Image 1 (cartoon, rainbow, N blue to C red):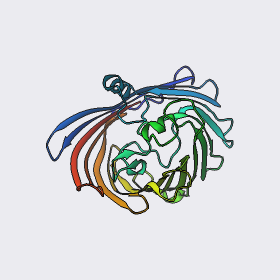
Image 2: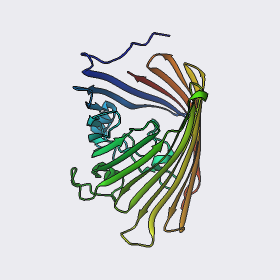
Image 3: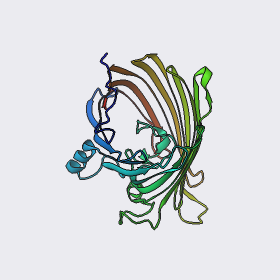
Image 4: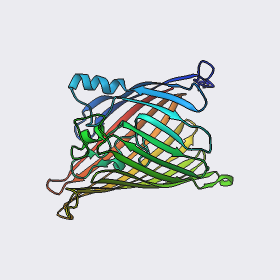
Length: 332
């Protein structure tokens, strides 16, 4: 194993550059077809002129290339970049970040296929697009080591590209129908036993859309993790209507176990249900993932996985598929 450098901070703490690259090889178990997918190629930089102020941003070259080639994003509402100004006046005081940012919805996973952000059972569309950001501001309070609070307001331009019934797709800086975010998270700990826990919930809302995420988990230091997250998302047909366009109920259960400092195994099981018009149509989906994370060198990860998924839409026959994937993740 190569030794890790102490830090990537440069210019006496003023600049911190980095890069995040993810590519994936997929083999479909049904057909044997192999696909190579460039998922992310993002250089980023953070500038810290004072200890209270940080300016940061990144640009996803892979997403931008796909957009230029295909004339559209990989997923509706996906963005190519993120940029923000973050001000934290003190450790025990609230901080604020403003810019093109992602709301703190539930748990932020590094796998965009997690059910907690998707309407998966009926159409397989995203409630929150992968690599989603919108213009907005979010305040975070972490003045107590056992508590995190978030509250934010956001433009709905990119969110409306994912779901045209939300906000507006005509004016990128229109805050006439903004999105609002609230989240609370507790951090119970048993330090002598090496156990760290988290329990929390978030509400993300825009007009007639409500998205509730509830989550809980714990970790055994340098050994194992367990996490469960559920989502209830509801979008009404119109203001005051008794019928609903869509209700989504999904949950994910996942865990990992560290075999060596450079090798761990992980798994995930998920279940999803989508309801139309107060019980007039029900769709179901479930899936599981088993895999490993292997670090042959510092900042290089190989992630082989097997993924299985099945969907039973109320108006169509059941579909199922499995696939083998290998992801290469290079980061610094």
